[in-house]
Length: 336
Image (cartoon, rainbow, N blue to C red):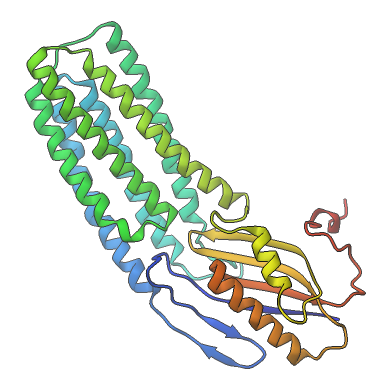
C-alpha cells in the first residue's frame, strides 16, 4: 500500500505571529487565516525608510571622511554603502518572495531572500578585506586627522544606524532582514569606535589610532558576515534547519500509534521560518485510508507545534515496499 498526504502550514517571517493554512485534501475542509501580507508590507515600509536614512548617513560620512582625512570614517562610509546596498537588496527580495508559486516555480520565490542574504554577506567580506589593506598602508605612514569633524560625523552615523537597526528587530527571524540588520549594527559599532578614536586623536594627536580602528571595524564586519554565510549555506544545501534536532523529529514520528517505522526522512527550509519535511512512514498494510488520515494528522500536529515544520509530505507504505529501508536512500533511487 502506498498513499501520500500533503499538509501546508505557511508561517510568516515574524516569529511573534504565525498564521497557518491547513489543507486537508481528503476532507475538503479548508481553514485559512491570512495575516502575513500585513507583515510583509510593514517590513517593506521599514526598509524604505532605512534606505533613505542610510543614504543620508552615507553622504555625511563621505564628505566628513575626506574633510577630516580619516580612513576610519571613510571605511565606515564604505561599510555604510554596503548597508544601503543590503537594505535595497532586502527590500527587493521581500517584494520578489511575495510573488505566488507557479507551474515553473512551484515553491514560489522565497529562496530569493537567502540568495540576497548571501550576496550581502559576501560584499561585507570584500569590504572588510579592503579596509584591512588600506589600514595597513596608513599604519606604515600615519596621517593627521581632524578629530572634531570625525567625531560629529560619526555621532550622526551611530544615532541613525541604531534607529534603523532597532526598528527592524521584530523582523530578525528572516535571515535576509537579519543580514541587513547586521550591516547597520556593525556600522553603529564602527561609528562608536570612530567617535572614541576621534576624541583621543583630538587631544593626543595619536593618528595611528585611525588605521587601528579601521582594522577593528574590518574584523567586526567579517565575523558578522561569516555568521550569515553559515546560515545561508545550510538553507541552500537543503540542510536540517538550525534549531531542529533531526533525531528528535524521527523519534517523535515513531511514537505515533500505528507507525511501525520511518525512513527516507528529509527536513529543510525554503527560507527563514518556512521549514518543510518529507518522509516514508511504514504502517500495517491492512489499515484503512481513514486510519492513515488519523496518523498523518497526529504527525503533522507534532512536527508543526514542536518543531515549526509547516509543510509535510509523507508517503505511507506497508512492510512489502520495494525499496531499501534506509534513512538516507535518496541517491540509491537514481539510476546512472
